[in-house]
Length: 420
Image 1 (cartoon, one colour):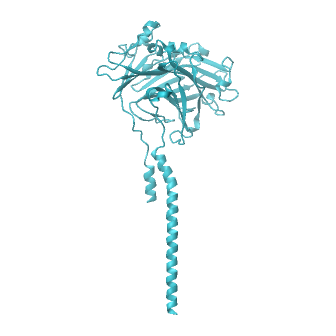
Image 2 (image 1 turned 90 degrees about the vertical axis):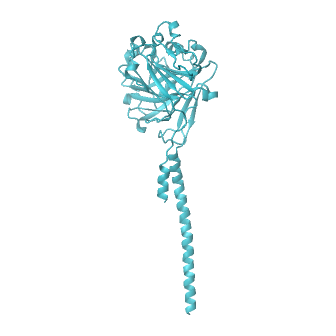
């Protein structure tokens, strides 16, 4: 009976059932008649994700250099819900045309918008094995700075599908001896129409209001940096007043069921005071040094804290990105930057495997939260319950056995006295 109870408890698993399902429509190079459009190089992907009462619009592109993901939440009108996007104007060198490349049809009301821009990569030679990018001066010989505005990207439509958007670098031009080439940097955006959990480590939980991305560095010539490590600069923007502060909050958990050895989840909010109606960037502080992800090849992801974009001098990167086509007055909205750094002391650094891959997600509303699953609750209950049950039954058995033995002894004694 106890064995059956234990098996029944183990059979339970936590199923994420909240959230809505969405209908997704993917458009490649909107505004062009052909999917492949040289004038829109390296291409634009526009995804319309229709919910019960609203629509999420994703615009993803590396036009201008910086890889960018823009998210626009609108109402769900009775008529046409798709935005008017012209990728030719988006790729134009003329600012007037660029500002007119995203417009909304009549009846569509924008409820909120936000997005992320990846502006630069930092490579540093961690000779002291501190795994701390702030330990080295950016102007020293231990640093190399890679500017995404000078990168060339492969055609985004060549590798992308309806729910997977893939950006692959072609080369880094003359920047730092063209260390990046032939897919040595890859960004993949996974779009979802339902709620579930990723099948790959770190098994991030997602819903229909989020998109996950994998950032991968591989086969890069690090030159004379024998102990190279990397930092990725990212800027998060929200359609709020520039005076509104953003925040990064870390949640701790006692459970590492989905990501062994990791007990934290970090959320970067565009609207900390009203999380349900803002955007977020979510990640677990872990990345992987091999494509076959496992705990044995995991290392740490850290951030350098939030900084004003003026302090880190990324205004030019924002204006060159597609974000400027939707926010022509980009200097007057809320935006903050941070550096995601990869590595941990004594992990060997990037040069050990020449590979680093990190997963995070961009989403609207309150981010998904890890909860102790029914499986874990069942295991804990069984682990604590079975010994208690055994003690109770064992104690009861001993008491009954003693009483039975005492009764039998008394009866025998009475029989012997009567014979005498």
